[in-house]
Image (cartoon, rainbow, N blue to C red):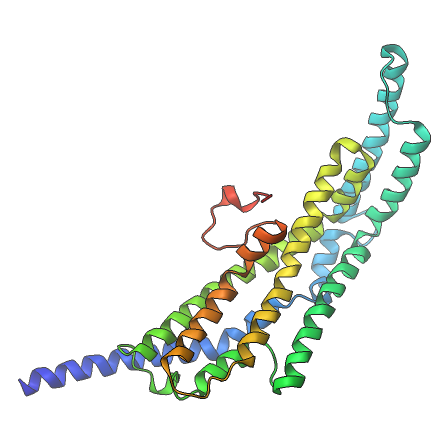
Length: 292
């Protein structure tokens, strides 16, 4: 009987040791990356390879394709105007078309700068919220600091974790949830880059009334993806405002509630203003579905 008990304790201790190392490895190496991909700033544009893809002038990259489409639109309008003289159909006046083409052509070729201003504006709001939290609580409002705060509490500590206790289950839930956030926000980071590359085409679509819907969908999706980090900053600010020093079950579940709120931020934003989904479990067919 005693031998069986010793074997059981050995197995439990081995399992706890494995999870301690796993949780510690994730905490030490992963969540600083989560801060970088969640709080998008102008650094996302400071990538030479990405800038080459976008185009450094009108003769290369995405800008070359969009300017070729611009010429195609001019030819399309010219043919449409010519046929209108025979079919007596009403089309947009030439002076209106040329004026719109010049304005949105300039916007198209300056879209890298325009998008940079949008990203900078959203980043400044996010940083203002984080700076407010740092002034109030003396902590850097981010995932790395959040995990440090969680692990420094007497209730949830990776160095003394017991996976078969309520504290161990909560820690496991938090770790798995935050790991899911890494994939979700990594997908969001890539999608922001995709919509940046679509920027020239979005501005060009405004040259035709029949294609202006593309710009509306594009700006809504880009705005919603960037707006996520503002909501995340507010949720983190609320979490840091809570007093987790007391050792009670309520605080433990508040941790889980806060993490669940961070997971659901993307869904909240889509329900509020619409936009593209970055949930990692979403299939490819629904990934580009525009919510209304």
